[in-house]
Length: 116
Image (cartoon, rainbow, N blue to C red; front, top):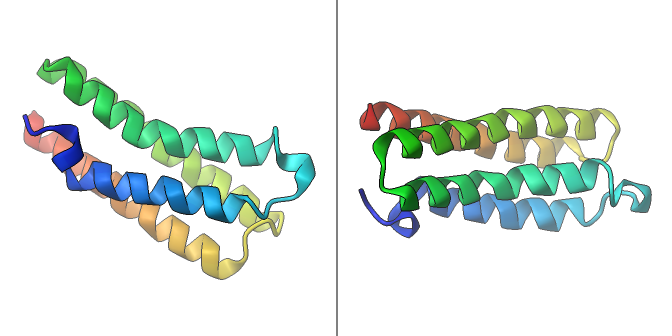
């Protein structure tokens, strides 16, 4: 198994987290411990679980952690929709972030399938 830092899905998810932090910085102050925090935690969970699963060096464990990352993607998709509906995200930012999270999810599916 490749080192997690060499994985394109890990690199893309790290870039995604960085973008999430920049964009959610503009969320309303009252969302600091609400949706803003939830979105940030879910986004950080994606590369973190890829890294942790990879470091386990057990294929079943690795697959399980990749599935957890994929679950975080679904959670994040939901939170982005809510943020758009509440006008915390403009349509352009929503579409870009949503496209990125869909791409990361597909990459995770591909990695999971290749490990099975």
